[in-house]
Length: 196
Length: 378
Image 1 (cartoon, rainbow over the protein chains, first blue to last red):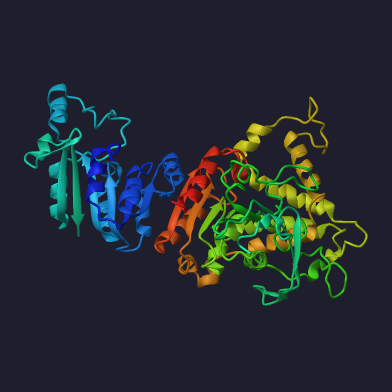
Image 2: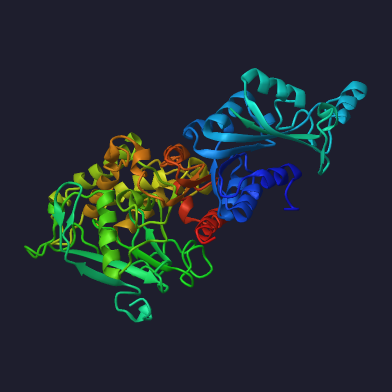
């Protein structure tokens, strides 16, 4: 599990063995493969990039090429125990609708995203006057796939507004978990486990 | 039987043909039997018969999936997919490929003899469907002692058969690979086929399909049918790259109707070489079967319902330049499978070769199919 990205490792630790799950934006299936092999999960994936899909199918995973913004509606209600949206929320056209769909399809949804309010980003914007380019956010403003920049507090506000429930929340700094206190300032990365 | 070295069994090997008593019940309500099936097998069945893969061929394909064609001498039509070190490998799999009924490479079709009269069936042969082709394959599996398929795999019309398999025999298929295919023939698909059929039937040598006795076959009509169809197998970009507006063996236009352009010469060659290996009536019957194909229609209009009874895994692949069976058609299948909770994979691969891409060099396709087949054994 050491090869997994820290947010994925955290999700892998939390998922119940034998669960049915849909990984939305599953990339090359790294998390799915771990969940299948170590937690005997029945894992399905949705991924927009064809070479990633080919790589995932090449490891024997059930992955469909598609778009989180348009293709989630083809999945029936409550067909999964978990939906996973890792590092994908900020790339969707309507993140709120995507999360709604996840919570329709699955009992619980993991949503992980980079925190745009991390202090390094704030300093970059405040003193440099430039959009931050950091380790977690390595792309420049014009070539980034991240079209909805979101902070921990933004996301919490959305959760509250929509009446979703937070079953778990984790914050990461580098590869390690960090405290909930001042997460909006100090967390580079947030993972929420939601339920409707 | 399972412990016998099955390669010594006369049912297995290259260039096999069997007459099955049948009859099989056809979609039309007619019955067909006895029926001949020509087929090949490669590799050996394992003890628990869990390594059997059925390969389904396309419109003008045949059973010679991985061995040299007896008429053209060319290597098997899918040697890139089936063979030693390939995703479907006789070292690991027991591979079956049979000529579809209605065709002309040894399975019962309009050119074969009606046992009742001793004459070729001609147009008296019953009209078939893709489902009928699958029923005949199932009858062949019964003969071969195969209950379950580890996988059924096909491209184009072969994909239609592969996709039909779990709808007709949900318990006999563990996984299903459908490449460059569709769940139904569109109006445009039917339209192109109708052009081909009309070309054949307009040939004065067609004579209502009774042309076998004197050998004066409607080759001109069949060649035109093939030329029209062949265009649909290629992409505009591919044609432009291969031929452009280049002239054929001349420096200037002739201001006549010779094949001035390379693309004309190429199509004429495709048409002429096709008539040597294919029967015009078979072309009529098989294109008709494809036009009648609509899996949802057979299940009350619901594609998802068609797959409700199966637990098979599915892998679908489309190609971005295929305008005959474009990606949208594969997506329709994927959405139906998702709706039913089936284990489905789908990817659109990039290729300049249009519909024909599934037959050509495509390492990504092999990687996907290989991974999918191995995934079932995890």
